[in-house]
Length: 127
Image 1 (cartoon, rainbow, N blue to C red):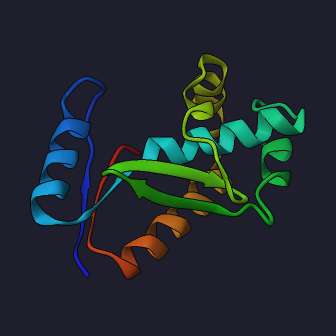
Image 2 (cartoon, rainbow, N blue to C red; image 1 turned 90 degrees about the vertical axis):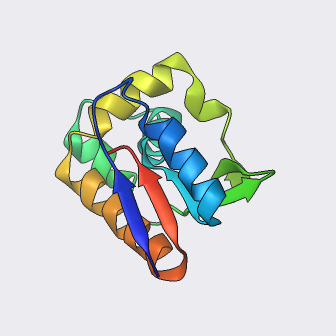
Image 3 (cartoon, helix red, strand yellow; image 1 turned 135 degrees about the horizontal axis):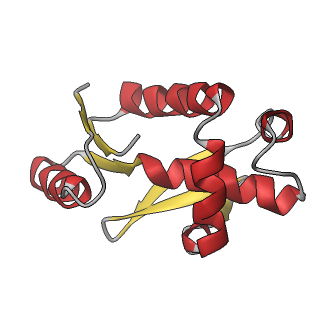
C-alpha cells in the first residue's frame, strides 16, 4: 500500500491538492482534521470538557470511528452514525482545536490513520 501525507499551513491548498491527487490516482482521500473534529464532537456530546485531558481521554475507549466515501466525498461515522455534517459546527471546530493538543488523542487517531493506510492506498491531508 502507498501512503502520502500532505501537511502545511492553513490556506496553503493542502485539501485541494490532496483531493485532486487522490481522485486522479484512485486513492482514498482522508481529511485527518475531520477525525479530530469527530473526537471533539464526542467530547461535547458526552457533556465533558474539551479543555480537560482526563475528560477527553475518557471518551476514547470503545470509540468506533470509521470513514466512508459517498460520491467521492469523505463521510465520518461515530459508532455507526454519520456525523459528517455535525462535525462542521463552529463549537465542534473549537473543541477539535483543543482536543488535538492532547497526546492521547493524537496517538489514538494516528493508530486509526495507520490502520486505514494498511488497507488502502491513501492521500491524507492535515495534522
